[in-house]
Image (tube, rainbow, N blue to C red; front, top):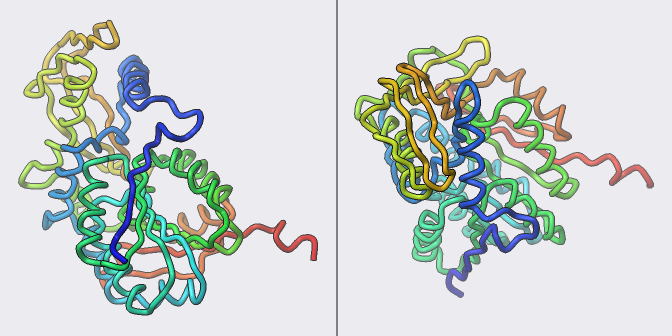
Length: 339
């Protein structure tokens, strides 16, 4: 049959603000705040996506290898959930699809009937992913959506005639603060059917030095990944950031349970951004907050599922118990209220 696909754009969905306009607005708001901040969502242009692939291959970045171990050794746990009948395999933040391809190969060998719907913010990453999937799996039906997560949820809500298994692998949910994570998970719940499954990767709390090394790699790739955000402002919004005048810094906040990432101004600066028509003042050593990477206790995961309408059905761990793929079932009481 061959792998068939088309790239759906977020702009094709109703009420979506054009991506460049939204980027400009978010930069204006973020750099006007005290302290300054920029959303990690904007890391993932084409260059950022390539840099993140390099991060995932770093020896310090244990998250990828731990989750790959889980998927390779426990594939039956995933296929047993869906059983017979057709379903959507929806992936939020697909990246290069290396982990998902293990699942897809297993599902095809089990002769399960499904179509693959990856959702990613990077068009270049999406094209590369689907080209690779097409070469590996000739019978795979795939339709990619280039969009942010919340726009992707709008698309999911328009397609309720099939069962769904949603993958949010890596530690993508950990980039949301607790309030935003609850909002996102409840929005996802609203978009899905009773009995659908969601697989979420959680990086578990562990030795602080191990966690810090994952975000302060010896090759400096994570620093380039963060600085790329300033380069993107220069390229897309006419910014005048000198990347050599900022330094990347990451620390672990024991109270919030998050790795917090910053770009720190090395000297007083006044930076103009043409598309915003404004200057932004920086003091020496003033930070721009760029990312949260929350880490979790098992009790945190249980509470989050309970608060947002899901029931945990499996907790799949790697051999070191550094990471867990938590499998949740959508529970909608109204589905049984009128029996």
